[in-house]
Length: 450
Ligand code: PLP
Image (cartoon, rainbow, N blue to C red):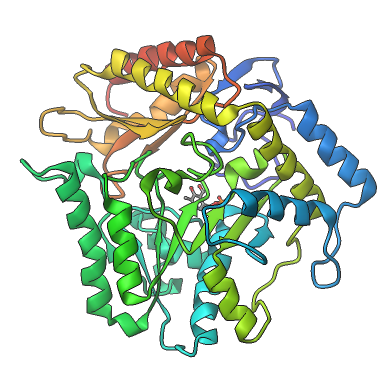
């Protein structure tokens, strides 16, 4: 690559990204030898950092044995072992035939939506075709997943291509809780919006409700209100609607438990998982379907009406299985909870009284702070100030990778910074990341409008 010349179609054609050439634990190393602490794991992906001899070794060994076979003809040992490992640790009600292994979060979401649809066909209720999702959700960028997503700006260019999805507000206490309303009452009100929407569409037409247990990329680590998921579960059960929990970003230990939903006293009918599953060593994702869903297929056609070439990819599965074994054997879920507390306390200490930080939120090593112009009124900055992209750039200059996003309030306004450091980070690295964030925020706020 010479200068700005590149045969790749980069996301920003006028400013191609710098080149990374190496990974060293939680650090990414660029072509100039500069080291960047990965405070975002890319986007909540690289939970074991960027080099891990055990995972690299497991993938290399598998590549030397068998890299790929088509799932229509063969199964393979690492795919079977990965599915078994996960099913053994899934909440009750998941068993034989529960897992599909795919390549990306979007692919998993497409497969989950199609599986929900197939479930109803097998059950003899083909009129159940509607999906309901939440405002400002992010479920991926393929057309089905994007249709479920609720970010107006991301949907806009493709709107004519998207299926019509029922919509309810997200449960986002900082933005939605009314004056004098308890968190529990707010959660119940937001859950009841699902009941209203199912009734509006006609319960006999609704196939599935899709929800991120902790709202990720678009809203910035928004945890559910207490009791919200239990009530959602009751509502889904009342109307026979399947609940799909999109744990692509918040799952696989990121919030301190293997599944984020474990903390909510409710279970989904279908889970999607991705990012932390492969930890970036291989592209891999999964769909886990409950026994109820799988049994309907078994009793019906006995066939999965969906497929992709790279399903159950042997090398990807070997990598994912090793990632999960490392998380378990090295006690990293407890580590996420401990470091998560430190991260949260550090955010509170630095930004709790900051005049331009309106909210600090998240779970485990999945935390965000929202930057506002007026803290009392919760008023976001004018998007022309470009706070989020400027933060990202300034942090990178300071050797820190973060995941800031703009538009988290309504698709256009709002700035937050998402932090999702590796599970293998040290206390000192977490503290240094927070110090850098504090200094960068002050620098960015001092900049004049772009
Ligand atoms: N679902 C959620 C909750 C996500 O955060 C993402 C990606 O950020 C996706 C789905 C899509 O995953 P991918 O980018 O791997 O297709």
